[in-house]
Image (cartoon, rainbow, N blue to C red; front, side, top):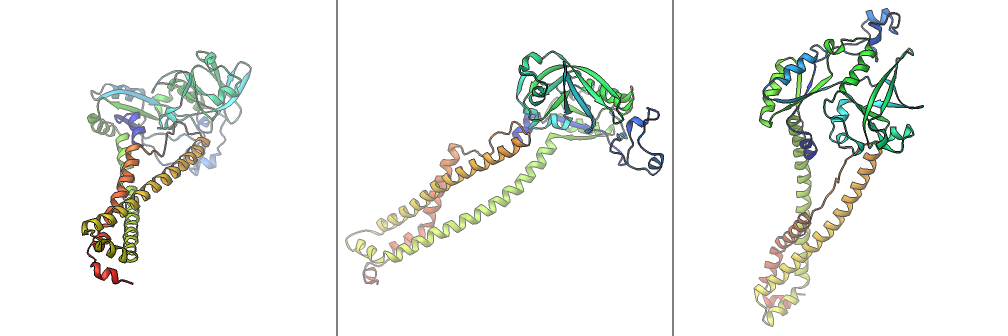
Length: 392
């Protein structure tokens, strides 16, 4: 988790406009006479429509972007434009067309989605104005086998309003990347063009503004100052450091819980070794007496039982390492199968056993066995040889 977040840049600050928690209405009803599908009674009642676009209390306008870019602590500003999730969109190439969905800015910036493998061309740069990146699934739906031949070509995005009106938007293909879903990543200005047409507002960015910004500070130390300045402008700001700190606190609680369970299991295992060695001393009392009678010293008896306890710990460590490695591989396979079926890419290994961890586990098991065998071994070393020979 931390590696994925750091790869995105801890200097990034995510800016979103505050929005009122009120119902909305069909957007195209505002500027397209006779097109409303919302009744006047519904409007008067303040009803909510799923086709609405909630207006931000403080919009992130292009002027806001320029203001942030002029700040001395800011390295770059990438605006984000999200299209409605219910958008009826099709991608047309030649005589063929296929339905597609536009990935939201959250999906594009996520630690998993952002690591999709590029099959041809390149990915969109943060905040890039024009261009589209197609998923491999969508390219196949369009009958394209040679992804490289598509790069640099112009495809047409056809958007249909709920009442049937359509609009066409030509865009240039920048690349094709892995993907199990028919999806596209769209440049900021191309997405804004579609959104202007959808809501019938040529000045949409000046009035409603962008859906968010990714502001990158010049250094990690400058992130708090950038957050404070953004909040002072009336916007909401969250940095990846905040998410990372929250994730670390959650994992700290989980580590504490797992450590408690592991400590209890370790205590029970140590008691088991101690009990086994004590029973071995009782069963071999006469043998200990014979050993001492023929000249074995206390140190010889002590060393014998300590080595046996250490061997029990060593064998337990080897067996536990083997079972744990197999279990980890099974969990790794099952998790990859599930996440890949959900379309998640760039997962990586979820269970790894490096050599130093394997060596440490076996050594620790041996040490636990050694410590657990000290008391039984010392008890065996103190046995009186005469009493031991008489033991029945």
